[in-house]
Length: 539
Image 1: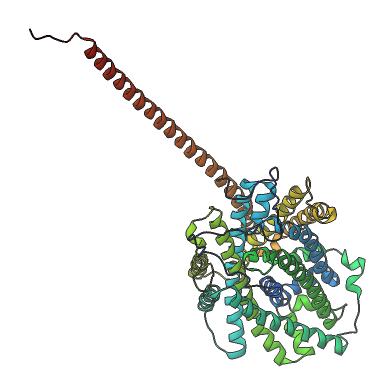
Image 2: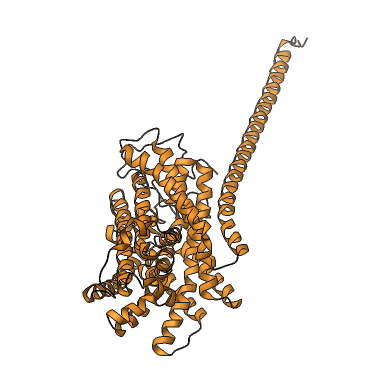
């Protein structure tokens, strides 16, 4: 890979003279006029927060996954979400400190390339692109399943899930094409709605005093460290997927060195506290002694049952609709993230330049959006043609490698931050840029190991299938590194060929010049010889 691709390694730190804004990237150039730039100053802190929190789909992970966390972890389930949020907040400390020294929208791969070298950086780029695509495309299965069930339950309309999924593919593409600011507004409205319905449920439970009074046993050490909490913690980490994508919007953010860190901290803090509060409230709805039995009896509709009981049927019906919009919001958020990864990689020369094209009016990465949309349509069509279950197969099987891949990328990013700052802290606090990344590495490795050992909770698949799904992560990472080395060798060979051709040309020029000089000398000698002959005299 050429030296101009992914940033310099940790051994060659480059600190900008003006870190506040001087590290801004030029972006993929479509013309000298910079026509390929994304829309500048389009996003503030709240916009970016909406984008990344929507990717986490709070209502979906609460209604769809939290009952399983309660079933496995019992009363301590809320603390699993607090613990996951705390670990990611520690990770975010170093992550946000490094953002002003990484001048493009590449997020994970840009950090890893800067801290650990360009080869591992390109491997991370391949893994990040594959992981975000897997998360986004897998969610179409959840959307098709949720929308089908909602239409059938509320309106007695039976629409095949592939039809609904393809409809979502088209709408997601259009909103991504129209620009990130339009998408942020849509996501803001949907996020407020799904958050509001969960708060209505929690308030209803607390006002009525719960199923058997209000208690706080969830936060006692005995329950926080009870058997089964490791599995609950693995599920809790999946509820934060996408929070780190704040860095992908750097080029479109207003004052990115301030906006990106703020949005990251707000997203992690909000999700951790909100999840813990909602899960605790649902535990109170059924009573601390009975909630585990309720979760076993209602693994798929625990939240609907609680909403019916403490708010009313109208609220549970609204929740079914908002589940669908929550999943759609996640689709759009991840679509935007994938497009910006492809855009950034094209600017680095790691992907074809065409993927760096932006729309002249909307300033959206429309070429990358078209490719991502086409890939999603192909995968959805393949699962539909195979008659696969949209939830058990398309969602769980496609999503799981993406979730594990992002955890691995977080570990590598924490190592990269440590490597970048350990020799030169650049005026940053040692706690923020050395201690926090080191602690984050240890905690993230433990969390990832927990997810891997309990992967059956994420896939509901056989051991063989799980082995294949897990194996995809290192295969993609190693393949990316191998491509980087191959590009470097190719570039060296090309440079060598150029040098050899240059030497041949120089030698040829010397030979030609030598021949000319020899011819000139011979001509001079002839002329001198003629002038030395005696002149003839006519008598």
